[in-house]
Length: 229
Image 1 (tube, rainbow, N blue to C red):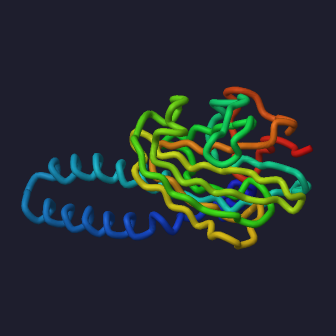
Image 2: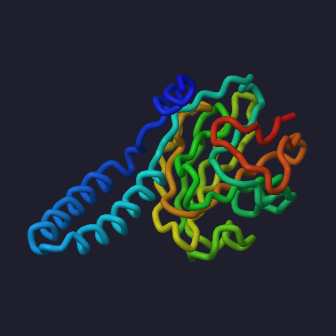
Image 3: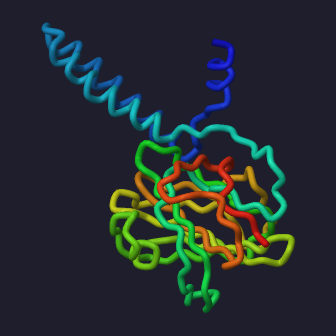
């Protein structure tokens, strides 16, 4: 029981959802009061509460934001920037920035996952670029290039450039990026937030040692994706 209470204390609500949760709770409460006052039978009120309180609890679950700290050695370490599942591990040609072959590791985030994003490496933000686009299903290969996305280039202390791409999906229509150009960044810090189902890609040097497998679940700021050579 003590471990369960300790775990609950490390979970908070993400700032992206506080207003929505508060206002929706007020609206639900107001309508519930109106139904209670307007009908002598409790059935309309009960039906309303079952549907909308369930929806509100799902939204509460979506906006949860665990407090996490990476306990390993962060030097030359690439950690998962998001909760989800590994859907891509492949060598690909990145023509927009690197113009060469890169190792791409992609994490798909379902609506049930935590949707906060973390910096995958220590370093300095080189630039941040937002690109409008389509809203294909996030797990499709073409989503990485054709969907709306935000690119964050990070230069590690060893001089390696790492690209992180926040990708919108068929349901995700809002990408929030906290990273700012020329700012230092560290593992354990939030990079941004993506609403509803989405995906995060990480582009690494080809010689990086991959530490995950296809289909493996990831925990943001905890799972080690790769080791840089």
